[in-house]
Length: 110
Image 1 (cartoon, one colour):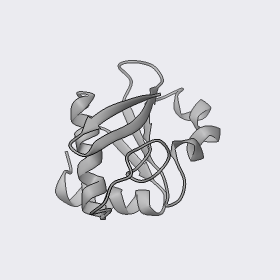
Image 2: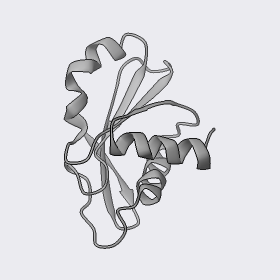
Image 3: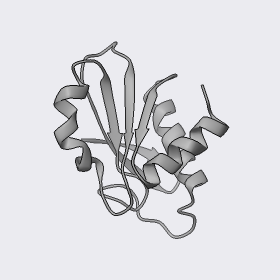
C-alpha cells in the first residue's frame, strides 16, 4: 500500500491492475476501509486499473480534527487523483462512498 500527502496528513491507497487500462475508483462506506472491496478485485482487474483508498478517518488514512464533510472527502479524492496523474476515472462508492461520488459528479464531472 501507498500513501499520498495531503495538507493535514496522509491518504492511504492501493492501485492495482493493468497499467494503461481505464481507472476504476472504489470508495468505501462509513466505518470500513479499502479492504471492503477485496472480494471484487479479481473481477475488476481483468478490465480496469483499480484505485481504492481509505477515506479520511478510516483505515490507515489521516485522522484529523475538523471537517469530515462529503465535500472534504471529495476534495481528498481529487488530490489523490492529481497526485497519481489520473485525469479521468470511473467511480463506484458504497454508502458514504456513493455520496462522495455524487459530490464528484456535480463538482468535478471530468
